Length: 399
Image 1 (cartoon, helix red, strand yellow):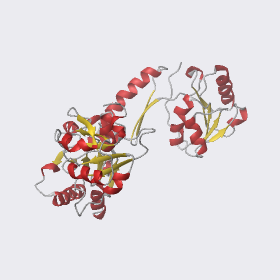
Image 2 (cartoon, one colour):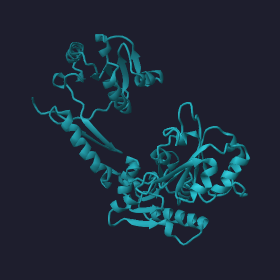
Image 3 (spheres, helix red, strand yellow):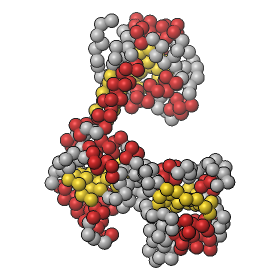
Image 4 (cartoon, helix red, strand yellow):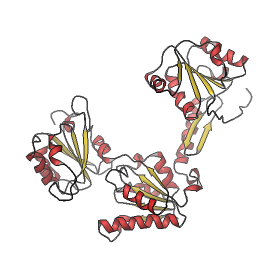
């Protein structure tokens, strides 16, 4: 076989035909839609995922077997069926009309191949390996790992901007791919103590690291100083990454930092993170919802007590809920929180748990009841997540 000629197709608004509605089509369709293709899909049946796209108007479903007329006006055909004879009839018809055709059943009988693809921001890498999908995927994965930590994949347009990156609950592998890519490109990293510290060891030697946990200010003044640093460094033409634990917008004061940058005319990119409110209980074997057990979960901050005049939490209302209650930053005020919940009707025997430093090698969890929580908290140190509800024992009945 001759060498393949690599080519990138611009499919925006151009008709593309997919034949088949099974697992292969389910894998191929999202990339075609992302490329802007005007997608027609012909198949007697669809997977639930494809049916959902059809119901949403993302593609046109022709609910029947392939007919030659389906190729009218088409620029590209993806044959996603296992039946060799059926695939051969489609590709033969496409060949007559000089339409490139990809085949899932026999790539060597096709006129076009789909490569193994790695995407990182504006960078797309396509790998072909002479007909060996396994080798193509292996090479693609190696390239993807390099791109994930390579500043070259981030455009120069980020200079003079701030990226607010959620680092996840602590395990460095739980940061998003985009978050890690932007972190690798940073000129300045402004980090707090709850961010994934191991990622800081991967920073380039020339990156300025600002550890805001060491700023000699009270909480309000400290936030003002963080805002000042973000704006000042960005205005100096640097790319600033504000690395935060969990998700920037879940009790992370990310909104305040975005507003400060907006007022100063500094563009901000927000990269959501895996919030500790869900991931830390999960790491301890606690699902925050579970069928027939909890149909709701509520996340609250416990950094100020229920009786504090600045508290915005309706604790009596929370006591009446039947679902899961997740409390962040509540270890210090846990005795008062528990007393308030009990006083307003929450059952003292409700299962409960506390998880310390979840997803890290220092993770520790304790289980008991709502009434037990103040005593259980004495065994742990912050940061810790409190979970109240029957989900705390659903995976380990009779704990």
